[in-house]
Length: 432
Image (cartoon, rainbow, N blue to C red; front, side, top):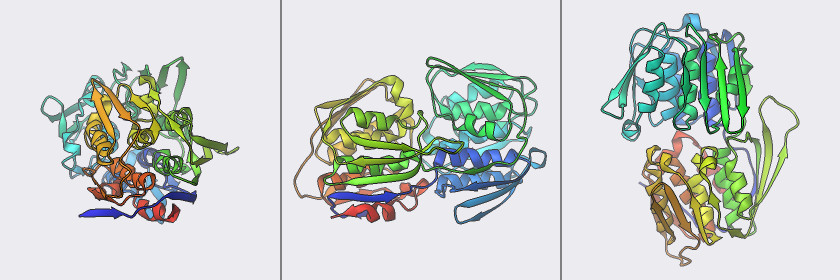
């Protein structure tokens, strides 16, 4: 069934997007390990996160959701291997981080998912967890789902991540907590640091050091000492759609409140500013996580080159930045985007299809994505096949504001995995 986005010309207003999905996943998993009652406010309620909640319930925790507040009675001593397969839906985060926790138990934990997730390779996860002493098996040479994990008495390792991945890093971090010796993880390109931030909040013994682009995490085996009490800040990856929508449309101003602005998550803002986008950040003076109010306004944009070391900081925002690139003058280049090919869809091809749906031009050469400014300015409806990829679907909706055209989107159902109220919030900002 197609979702119809009516033509609009402006976005105006304030928005508070759902709690950050990455932080929500990690907070739920960590709460299962924490003694006593953990409280997580402003939890993301998308399907992916709810599947993670079901995962910790299968581990033996007791939890209750009231609105977007989650209370969890946890504690490592009360956990056990799940008696049934874990349904991950479309969530690679659940599989990878959940595999780290599954190494605590000698019994098998089996992760299964939908057709899209079942095609995504998990091989990068297999190597470090196997080195630690876990048994982990997937299907075929890429270790796709179903994925079976068993552990027991793990040993600590020193592991240099061959490819930047916050999910693989976090899986190792969770596994390291029950090991018999310390673990050191080395990144040569920074990825999001939510696991490090949350581990520190609950008293886990870890040291973090940075030297240029090198990031080292040293973890002594230890479980959380105190419950987790946190208000999850707004998800910058979700807010990006509305902020870019304001920049590419006429007479628009959008303010996103209570937004997480850690430097590993806001690369898209830096890119928008380099393109000429009018973006203002007002940081909150208090809090244990970096939070701000971010305002974006209509702007005249120029093309941009996004370099390889920037990609990990905006990997989820490339679909909406492609919309911005269509509104810019010149050819924008996104370097080294091969990681996009193993997302919810082959996002490189999906982005090219998205751009072409609007009458724009895009192509990929080797690992680089090129988007040429310009699009069809007719009044004809636009048809986009989002292939159930939530970020492609939301980017297509924003394209309706840029072009003031009706947009018909197939596969919009995928948005429910991360942002259940996206259309309602989008309509609240729409000014025709």
